View 1: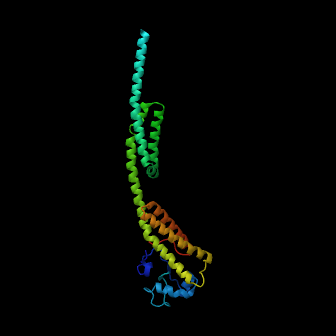
View 2: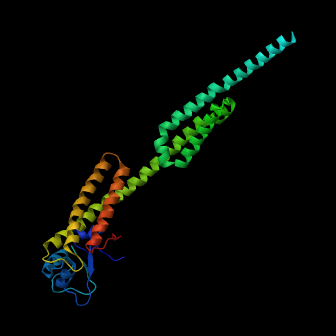
View 3: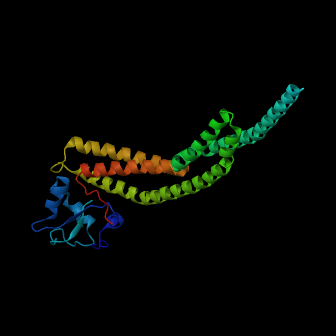
Length: 68
Length: 200
């Protein structure tokens, strides 16, 4: 079982929280487009993952991001 | 002379027979009535929690009544004499079965009452995000999204109703409603493309 203790906000203790595991070629904009249909909403994903992301332009393959 | 003696003996025999019948009739009637009254008092719970045992006792009462109605008071008494004890034993078993069922329902409630508000939060979070979006994601059309939003409102109302049922002591109804909330939530999550299985 993967440790989710580093997840952000209410997602950390919410068994229904939604996650995305970063794949090669992913950007927060692409992820926002995939889940919300709007790439401009990427800051929301960044904010939800501030504990593991310092820069919205720097995400790493394998990172588990919470998708609000 | 003989005829008179014979009639006297016959009358005496009849009197003994009637007396004997009367000796069985009243206790048989009393045992049947006592058993029926006691069974009536527990019938709702007994049929719910121990239907097979309830039927067994009910059949035994019916058998005793059938004998009684055929004027077989001795047979009726034989069939009925243990009935009050059987009903009493059934009552004890029903009480235990009910307590066990309520305890299991309470466990279910405790589990769901911890999880379901989180499920609502997760759906609300996604609905809020999608509401900010200029365009819905691939695979999600406006009608489905609108249905999800109204479903979420419905889910919240159902959850409130479940909590009210629990507060008023109706655990069974509360759990039934909570299960409906859970099913509705899973349906909404699936329609929004969310993962429905809670992470453990």
